[in-house]
Length: 338
Ligand SMILES: Nc1nc2c(ncn2[C@@H]2O[C@H](COP(=O)(O)OP(=O)(O)O)[C@@H](O)[C@H]2O)c(=O)[nH]1
Ligand SMILES: [Mg+2]
Image 1 (cartoon, protein in one colour):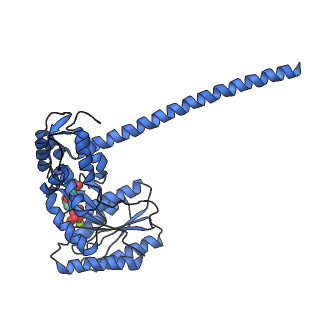
Image 2 (image 1 turned 120 degrees about the vertical axis):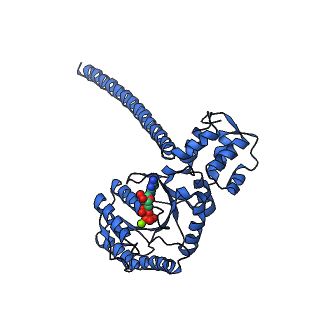
Image 3 (image 1 turned 135 degrees about the horizontal axis):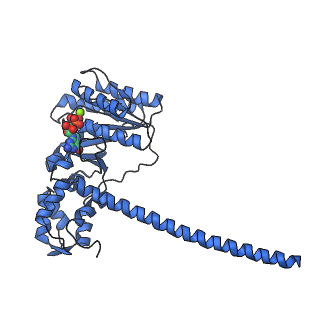
C-alpha cells in the first residue's frame, strides 16, 4: 500500500517538475524574444541617431533623391555623393561598374567597402593607464572632444585624468580646466609657455601613481608648416613612452567636419610626422559635408572612432561604418534587403 502511494506521489512530483520545466522553457523563449527586441530597438535607435545627428547631410541627400525607391539611377546616386562632399575620385572608385539602376544591396556593398582599408582596432586588454594623445589644428575641436571622451570614460565606470598639453595659449589651459571641474575629473597643468612634454610626462606618472584607467592629453593646434611646433609634438610622443612603455597608445587626430575633404591634407601631414592611429571628425551637426567621412577614412586608411555632433559633453557618437551606411540608405531606399 505504502509503495503505491509513494509511486503516486513520485508521479505527481514528476508531473510537477515537467510542468515547471515547460514553464521555464517558455520563460526562456520570452527572454530570448525580449533580448532580440531590445537589440533591434537599439540598432534602430542608433540608425535614427545618425540621421538626427547628421541632419544637414541627410537633408541634402533628400533634396537630390526626395522619394524613396527600390532602385535608383546611377546619376542620382553620383549627384547625391557629390552633394554630400565625398571626393570625386572616391565616388568614381566606389561606383565603377555599377548598373544604370542601382539596388540598395549593390550600393551598400560599395559604400561599406570604402571603410575597409582601415585596420581593425582591438579594444580588449588595454594597457593601464591607456594613454591617448589628441592632435589637430587650432579650432578643430580637440579640447571639446577631450571633455567628451572623459565624460564617456566616466560613464563606462573608468577613471580618467586630463593633461593640459596645449601650453601655447593660456586660454587653452583654462578651457580644459573648466571642463575638468565640470566633469569632476583630475587635470595636470602648468603655466602658459612651459614645456608641454613635461605635462604629458606628469599626467601619465600621476595616472600610474593613482591607478587611473585613462589618460587623455591635449596638445597645441599646430599647423604642419610650423616646424618648431611639429618638433614639439614629436618630443611629446617620445616623452610619453619614457613615462610608460608604448605610450601614447593612441594618437588621435581631430578633424573639423565642416572642412570636408580639405581636412584630409592636414591629417596626411600629421600622419607622416607622428603616425596617427585613428580619427575623430567633429562638428558634423553643422555641416552638409558628412559624405567626407567616406573619403577621410578611405584616403587615410585609418579608422574613424567617433564623430562630434555638438558642443556638449554627450555630443559624441561612436562611429560604425555599417550603421552609418545603413542609416544613409534608409533615407533613399524603400527596401531593407534584396
Ligand atoms: N557644433 C559643434 N561645435 C563643436 C564641436 N566640437 C567642437 N566644437 C566647437 O568648436 C570650437 C573649437 O573647439 P575647441 O575644442 O576649442 O578646439 P581646439 O582648438 O582644437 O581645442 C568651440 O567653440 C567648440 O565648442 C562639435 O562637434 N559640434
Ligand atoms: Mg584646444
